[in-house]
Image (cartoon, rainbow, N blue to C red; front, side, top):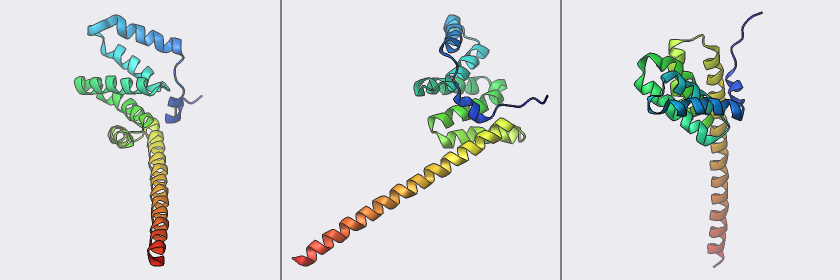
Length: 153
């Protein structure tokens, strides 16, 4: 049986509250001397959360690891990309994901996440164009009404 890496979409399944509570308890127990692996595990659980504030905290913790632990940067890249994607920070998500793909071009999770990021950026871009078009049409309509009113005077 072949081992299959999870798709990036699998990240939408948050941990059960009691599972996250175990990670949180270990993180808090270690206090100011929290180990890097404990911090990483807790950040991973937070990133998987459906709570925006927990996702933000997860990205913050992973950013600390990324900055302060050069030998752990590669393993942080995917979850920093994923966390930023979930928060709607698509430029940051793409930046971290591209860094990972530069080092691991065959990484299936990163390739899957790249597709999700690209789809979301394209969808949001189309939504922006639709909104701007609607505003332009409305402005043209109001302008036409104003001109008609000015001509009648």
